[in-house]
Every structure is written in C-alpha cells, then in structure tokens.
Amino acid sequence: MNDRLDAQFAFLNEADRLKSVLRATTLCDGSRRENSGEHSWHLALYAMVLADQAPKGVSIDRVIKMLILHDLVEIDTGDVPIHSSGGAAHASADTIAAERRAADRIFGLLPPDLRDSFRAIWDEFEAAETQDAIFAKSLDRVQPVMQNLACDGGTWVEYGVTYDQLEARVGTKVARGAPKLWDWVQTKVRPWFG
Amino acid sequence: MNDRLDAQFAFLNEADRLKSVLRATTLCDGSRRENSGEHSWHLALYAMVLADQAPKGVSIDRVIKMLILHDLVEIDTGDVPIHSSGGAAHASADTIAAERRAADRIFGLLPPDLRDSFRAIWDEFEAAETQDAIFAKSLDRVQPVMQNLACDGGTWVEYGVTYDQLEARVGTKVARGAPKLWDWVQTKVRPWFG
Image (cartoon, rainbow over all chains, first blue to last red; front, side):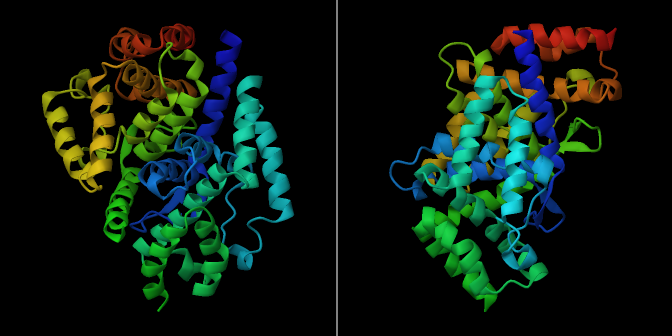
C-alpha cells in the first residue's frame, strides 16, 4: 500500500507543475495570462454548467474527468496557442508526437491500473471520435472565446485573427459537439469583429 | 434559450475571478502562492487518483463536482487560511455567515435549476455529514499538507505550526474520511516536525 501511495503522490506532485504552464489566453479581466491548471478547473465547471448543451448519450461525469486530465501533457510540451503560427502549430505532427511522449512519462508515474485508465481517457480526448470527447473538445474551444470577449479581443488582437479564421479554427470544433452553443456564441462574437 | 445561456455565462465569467483568490499555501516549488481555481482543479485530480482511499459507497463523481464548486464563495470572502489566527478564524461564525451570503449571490447568477442543484452540493460539502462530503473534505485538508512537505514546511513555518496543532486542525479531518491515507501521511510528516 505504501508503494502505491508513493506513486500516487509522485503523480499528484508532478501535476502541480501544470499551474506554471501559461496559455495565450488571459483571465477575463485581462490582468494576466491563464495557466493550464486553472483553465482545466474552469472547463470542468463549464461541463457542469453547460451539461444541457450536450447531445443525448454524453456522460458529463466522463467529460469532466477528460477535462481534468486533458492538458497534463503540457507540463512537458507547454501550451501551443491555437492562433499561433497562423494556426498551423496547434495540431502539427511534431506537437502530437511530443504530447504522446509526455503522456508516457507523466501517466507513467502512476500505479499501472491508474496509468492505463487515465491514458485511455486522454487518448480518447485526443482522438475526438467519441461523443464524450467531441463535447469535451467543444468546451475546450469555446472557453477562450468567452475569455477573449470579456477582455475586448484578447488573443484575437494579439494574433490578428479574422472572423473567418475564428470560424475555421474554433467555430467548426465547437459546433461539432455543441451546435446550439456555437449559434449563441456567434451572436456575441460577430459584433466584436464588426 | 438565449436568456438561459446568458445566465450560464454570467456565472462562468464570474467564476473566472476564483483564479485571482490567493491561498496561504504555495505551489510545490514554492515559487508563488496557489490560487483557489487551480487548487480546485488539483483537488478534483486528487479525487480521481485517490479514489481507492474512499470508503465503500462514496461516489467519486459527486466528490469531484463538490470539489469543483467548493471554493467559489471565496470570490467574495477570500480564503481564510486554516492556521491563521491560531486556527480560530477558519470556521468562525462570521466566516460561515459571509460564505452563505456569497453562495446566495454567486449561485444566484445561474438559472434556477442549476442554482438549486449547485447550492445543494455546496451545502452538503459545508455540512460535512454525508460520506461524499466527508471524503471531499479529507482531500481538501490533505493537499496543503503535501504542498507544504514539497517545499520544506511552507505555511507551517509561516504560522509556526506544531505537530500537535497539525494533528488537531488537519489530521483529524483527513482521518475522518480517509484513515489509511492519514496513516501514510503521518509517516511523511513526522520526520519534518522532528
């Protein structure tokens, strides 16, 4: 039992480092960049609040777990902003390979049963093929939109993003898992882009 | 539908402010104080990792939701460190009353169905009478112990905490929901206090 708890806490203490990984997006008040730990908490809360936007059959409990785990790999890779490098860096083959190595190392700190179950949840999120993963991805994409709207453009200004680019990089992904949510967000976003 | 989403996002944007509420505890590397948003994420991860420490009958899914919501009231009240004022401020009548007013305001931003269900979860956590709430409280108490251990004492040094005080203020609460976990933590903590 002691070896098991040693491994569990080696992972939990390592996870603490996600609080030092900074994203491009800021807090709603623009005071500083958001870190990936607090972002993950906010997304779990998004899942609880927006559960009624999930298609029938989605398990919100599983979505919450996915969102709690989804960014842990950034401890090794850092966050790759979706609008950086003209939108090309985010899901590049290099990024994907680095994130898989990070998942091997970080989930590998856990006892084998937890390592395998957490890795399966993370793989499912990354693959974005199941209903739960598609809805989780929608929330991950919509939250920065709301943060940017709250602080007059945020990373849209920083990266010179157009409305068409936002639709292509973000809107299609939000709409895939939560179409009515994106309809509503569009009514808020369009006036900002003018 | 639009009014409902307006209310859901009024709450989600207000919740963003929890990322600016600082706790006494620092990150494991001691680089800065932890905020209550990232702390809530870390606790949700604790629940996933330490699920095998929960007594039979505990719903980890409910525990995770409790931990995601448990500190939101601190947007209005701030965090009251457990070892501050000689351990007397943390659960004082004044603190409890202020937190209830904060819960009225913050959960009151939500549509009525979510307001009532979230408030019920928060009330259950605060009352610490159900198995789920008692286990959630154990995790909330044990995480700062692990953060302090990782950075050579942290708030124990700051507040001049003795081993007996730690047992009284923290150990009894951890042991109530997760007795074997506290047994293990004791073996790590005792050498530090010497």
